[in-house]
Structures are given as C-alpha cells and as structure tokens.
Length: 322
Ligand code: FPP
Ligand code: MG
Image 1 (cartoon, rainbow, N blue to C red):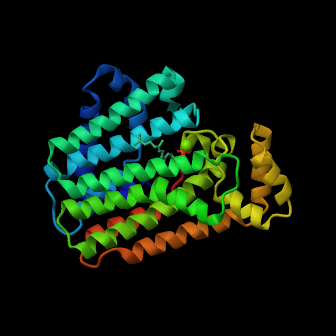
Image 2: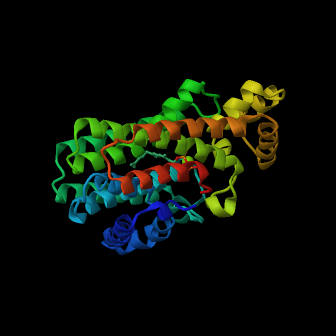
C-alpha cells in the first residue's frame, strides 16, 4: 500500500498543490532545478503530508497557512539527504544518481545549503511566528547531532540505547516535529499538540527501524539504493545489534562489521548470519510496538476521517517497501 491511498479527498488535493509548490520553489534557479528535480520527484512526501494532515485534523486549515511550511519541510528533508549522501559517499538515491556523484561533493554541499536557505525563506515570507521557527531550528539541530553521533562512531557497535538515541535524533524528531507543527499552525490546545508530537515520535522510530531493515532486505529496484549501504559506510543498525545478541556466529559478524572495510561478499555473509537469527522478526516487532504507541497517542478530539488517515499512515510505515 502507498500512503497516498490513505489520504482523504481534501488531503489528496493538498498533495497536488504541494507538488506544484515544491516544483515552483526549485524552479527559481535553473541549475538547482536541473540538479534537484529528479531527486525530489522520487520522494514519498511523508513529512509535509503528516504536517498537512495534522493541521487539518480538527478543522479545515486554509492551504495558504499550510503549503509554504509543507514545502519548506520537504526542502529541509531533501537538503538533509543531499548532505547525507555526501557524508556516506552514496552514488544512488531514490533510483537516481546522487548530487555528489554527479557534480562532486563541493557543489553538492552548496545544493543542500540552497535548499535549506529556500526553506527558511518560505518560512520567513509567511510569518509563521516564533513557535514554528523554534520547532524547525530544533529539528534541524537534532538532525545534525544525530548524524554527528552516528559518524563519530562508524564501525563501532552501538548499545541498544545509543541506537535509539540516534534514530530519535535523526528521524523521529523530524516526523514528530511535522505533526507538532500541524497542531501549532491549527492553534490546537497544548495537550493536542503534545499528543500529535507523541504520535509522530512513535511513527518516526518505527520508520527508521524499517528503513534499517530495508537497507539489508529491501528490493533494490524498489528502495532505489543498493543493499548493505549502511554496513558499507560503517553504520551499525538494529538488525546487526540484535543478531550480535543472539547469533551463534556473533564473533564472525562482529569481525565483519567492525573491521573498517566491508566488501560485497562481507555484506552477503552478514545478511546470511542475520537471516539465521530472529533479528528480522525482532525488528518488525519493535517497529510495530512503536506504531501501536503512535496510535494510542492520537488525540480523541480529531475528525474521524483524519484519525483514520493518520492510522493508515501508521500502517503504511511498517508495511512499506521503500
Ligand atoms: C538519511 O538517513 C539521513 C538523515 C535522516 C539525516 C541526515 C542529516 C544530515 C546530513 C544533517 C544535515 C541537515 C541539513 C538540514 C542540511 P539514513 O542515512 O539512515 O538513510 P539512507 O539509507 O536513506 O541514507
Ligand atoms: Mg545515509
């Protein structure tokens, strides 16, 4: 299932407007458009649509109030992916060549910076106010710290608690901020905003756990990136952490993932060891538990159609293949 299928008619209309506004934002400069359009085309729009759905969840919120910020959220996300691909020296993202591979890291840094600046221009032009700006700056600071924590300990097995800290900083805070921003822009009560934030947080933790599983076991033609990318760049995630706890071949797996250089044969060997344990089921069970917690946090004051869409997005997160 694609999460777009979960959208009600009004939300689907908002998605079409969003697509147009994203295109318009990157059209400002011909080189930025050429560099970013293929990458942006392949996105799921999960972050901006979570924001839009939350903003419309109690009462209709006019598109003039939601669309600039929704566009900014997608641009911030894209900027972070462009920078992430430089850090990881990735060659493929969403099925297309990465900016760093196509133009070199120097130009790719500047492409990411441009997208980031454009996002904050949209926020400034539309007078979103201090609470929105604080939420955005906090989410970006956390994103950076999550990435720094990860990149300062490549090829080192994190504790379970460090893994969760990282995925919270790297992913869950972004998704929870999108939901929180929806509540803020729609002037919801502090309680409702807190509940939407908790919903987004559960969603985000589950999203990253599934992402980490897909990195090993996803279909490359669907995920748009090669298998084992995390291991290759030294990022050790939940499937490995779990397999190291329970596998009879833990010593071999540990040696493979911490040696500092990972070949394609090493990735295949690691996948074989992980598959022989309960790691895949374990990760899915953990992701489902976070989705359950997301669901119970949905405020009961929302429109039925909105609650339904937000619940279906939660299901999409665990069932997704890309
Ligand atoms: C993808 O995750 C990357 C991130 C979640 C965040 C990256 C953040 C930065 C590089 C900080 C810079 C931020 C800005 C706004 C300029 P992943 O590496 O787990 O997934 P992947 O397999 O899709 O690469
Ligand atoms: Mg990455």
